[in-house]
Image 1: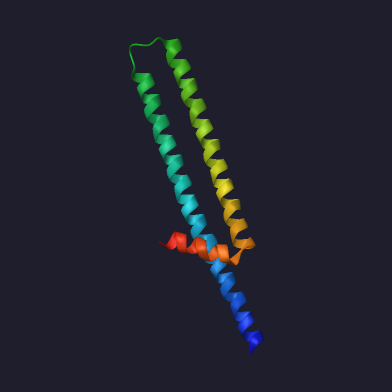
Image 2 (image 1 turned 45 degrees about the vertical axis):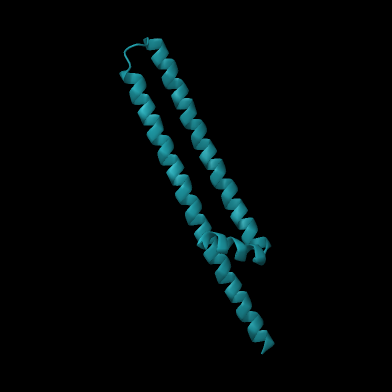
Length: 110
């Protein structure tokens, strides 16, 4: 009888781990997608403003567009780095500590 309970506990923990990993992944993916969309919209808006400005020279426009493009690429790498860190953190939490999983699940369900 104790062996059956032990086997059930392992299955429940596995299901709990899977659900936590899935929930954390979905929330992380949603936040990264939102950050990417915001960054893209900001880049497009700045590009349109730079192109439509009449009070700066062509060279200044080109310099501004280059800086805008560099900022956009920087934000892309930053978002990718955040996503990687969050993914590995979630994986580490779920694999390393069942107690931590319960606390994380409580955090994300509230």
